[in-house]
Length: 266
Image (tube, rainbow, N blue to C red):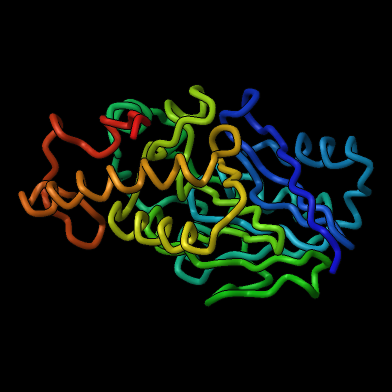
């Protein structure tokens, strides 16, 4: 069994938005970054000694434009097929995210005002349509695509045989990756409780580390402590009828919004 190495590919800032290069018998890219970042990702892949033409697959973790914004461009630059989950086909095919964004806290409410998050990007049609757990051995890495819905309906993560979980926006570093190593919600979730259930199901598989779309790798034990606190908080919000989700659609008070308390002490 060949070992799969996970290499971060910064797309914006040092850690604010990340794609990933997975190195095994053949290279795989996870996520395609913001619109217009395809060449930057291609150049960074080449800087790691990989011929971009050798990339076997581009996995898009979900239908937000900071993750699929350059999928079509990166497909043209590498020739690699693109994999995406069937439940996010709408954003992929239209180049538009599902709106409105549902903020998890103050950062999300601020970011939701940005015109860049509401723009239309170049759409794409996934060559590999993900409907469930998908083995990537045929693409040259010992890893699996794991459906992890909640952030969006079609969110996925990639779990390697060594326990590296490339988690997309299942979890993030605080303040959009600025507070390194500190678990927090990303700025938006379509369904916070479903996302938390997906996160806990991945933690139950005992990953060695979590590689996230926004920030540096996270320690699983620290994420478990955060998840326990988050479960209690979201349960209180749901009981009070204040948990807003895309499916449930109930109101959310601004004074107790998800993500406002992302402290990491036990």
